[in-house]
Image (cartoon, rainbow, N blue to C red; front, side, top):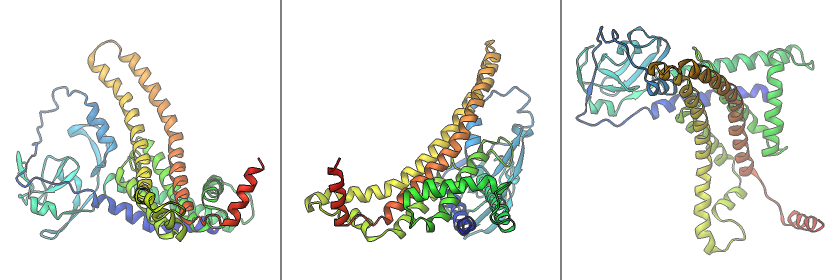
Length: 392
């Protein structure tokens, strides 16, 4: 019961770190004399038939954005504008909705949206100019802490997690000792699975308790966001776990917990492994230190690459319908049936991958925690193990 309620201890820290990750990695170096094209809105540009751009469709769905696209294309697109929150030491705080940019066609209040990045321009008023000169000095010191699509998706997932666990906790208080039902019945097998098959097996029966709040939080966070990413309509469709910044922050938290809770036995094996000659340690110690940093990197890449690849494959086969339809080859219906069938198959496979990636990330994190607090075997136990092995 305590482990189920203590999940909320890590919500605030996890969310703050994930939220700030977007402002840390949002800055893109800008050339000092760079001039950016700002395409004016042409009311007649959609009169002709526009060719389908599969790359633009896929990139638009897997990358973060300052608005949430719902339906349509071009001038007729329907999207939910999101708050833009900018701070510059020269211009101060600026807060407005992203629809002021009109999908990158206009500047507003001295800022412009360029390829999902907000840059400062010299013009301080809203303009329809063909060119806008980037103010490199302001852009370099610009903090973008906007509520982007991925940030809003994390708000939704955290609200959903709070609702699920608070509902389950109330059921435990109202009906103690009774068989679980409703939300309680859905969550309890998963909580027991994380506790018994991940935490206890990887960390140990005696020391797994203090890691349970984090392991449960990260497991449900990844799993729920993976599932929401498969839903094509709002509040789903955001590629949260397929964003490398998310994987980086989650892996960094695992690394920090591992380093902070590690015991002397762990550091001794990292810095100077017992029983190894000094000459060998010169080569072995740098490798061990490199491996310590490599583990969280593997965590980050595994989650990011797997979820990103799943979205790209599904969207690629779905795009074949429109590509062959434009080619007028007569294969449109056949390709359409095949693409829809394969997309459904990939969707079903992604349901398994959503759970599998949450499980693998949590299991590897637990294994890192277990290795950091492992006490090792004393000499007596070591000799007993050798004697026991000789009997076989």
